[in-house]
Length: 88
Image 1 (cartoon, rainbow, N blue to C red):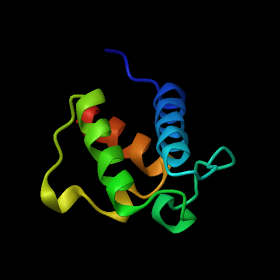
Image 2 (cartoon, rainbow, N blue to C red):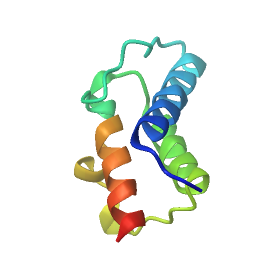
Image 3 (cartoon, rainbow, N blue to C red):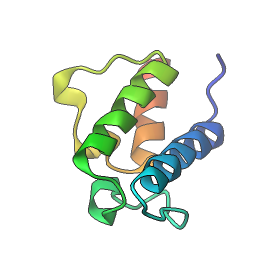
């Protein structure tokens, strides 16, 4: 699978929007830099669902210590972390 940053970001953004919609929230204006938990669009269960989706979609098992705001807090952070780990 070829990983392109814009494609990854688009997929993550769409997943966030879909999860927010299930909760009756509108996340369509989320930016790449927004800290996802701070937006209030997703509850803790939806954030966990996002992380599980991320791991499965990109065949990217995370270590406990990697699950943090620096790596997974925003769309940009998630895309950059994935690309850095997959290229290294």
